[in-house]
Image (cartoon, rainbow, N blue to C red):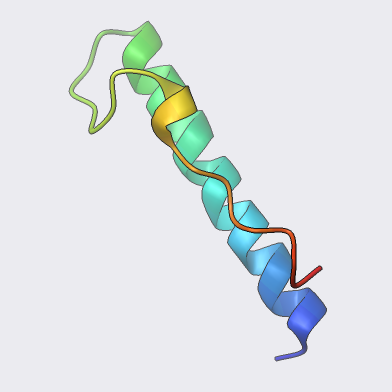
Amino acid sequence: MAAGDNALANEIDWFSRVLDSRIRLYFEQGCEVASISEITPPPLKDD
């Protein structure tokens, strides 16, 4: 997998976690975080 592909996969994984957490928080379902800002985005150095 090329470095760009790996960076894109990391971004998609991060976005998926943010979206899932936001929906869970909105509907007051169990969630690992109290705010989506707690989910650290992947570093951009490999882009």
